[in-house]
Image 1: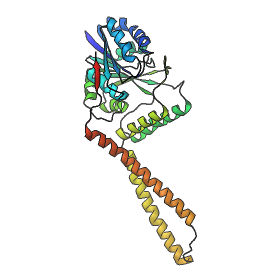
Image 2: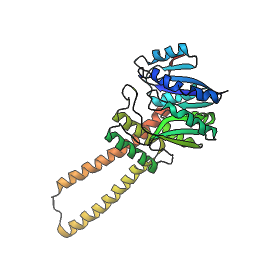
Image 3: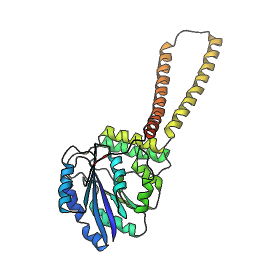
Image 4: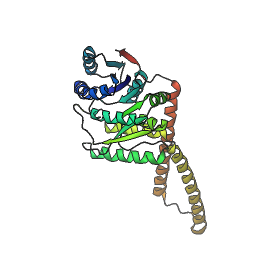
Length: 309
């Protein structure tokens, strides 16, 4: 029999663990008919509540449940990478414990794998229930990424994805410290089927993704899969250099024709502030890439395991 490993990243999800397990087990009969064994691999990303205790209670009654607990909160990207490394299945699926990734889609996802696809990914067709400002920036982020990156990143894409072992092995070859999984999946390629579904609200609890965390995550995605910001900084420098030459010529000609008046210092101050701001912005862009290089060369582990059951 083939083995399907379900990787479940968790961070303070004690309220949802049991409901998630119950919903997931509704698909068990389908996979039994397909002669596919199931195993659940919970990755506890340094939770401060009783998430680990809830999973341990499941382990006591179901030997197919496993737990890997981090020594602290390393972030979802680290949890996904750990799930890939720890998963032993012929197929691997990522699914969130908050039930925003409907387990009912799993039979359809596996059916496409049987048809020959290497992976089946999911995307939301709407963002019902999200704050309008958050939806606005999310849509524009994906629009921007399509323009500045050669890697396909689909609007509304979720981490909810079913993969064959060869896709998992390909992703594991990308061992960078700064990880942006949505971009990594697009970069490795392979034939992928996209499933669309309506946005589903969290079963219980509150999202761990604030606006500023999502903003920082978007910066991570842009700097991981595009060098366009660096090109922008370079072109900005060239533009202001040309503008400065034109201004010098204009000032020289004006001085010859009309003399050298001393008025105009307010506009000069504004120009200095503008150019200084542009310079600092461009230095910040370079700094982002330099910081990523700094973190990579230190070669620290992506995560540390405190407990493995």
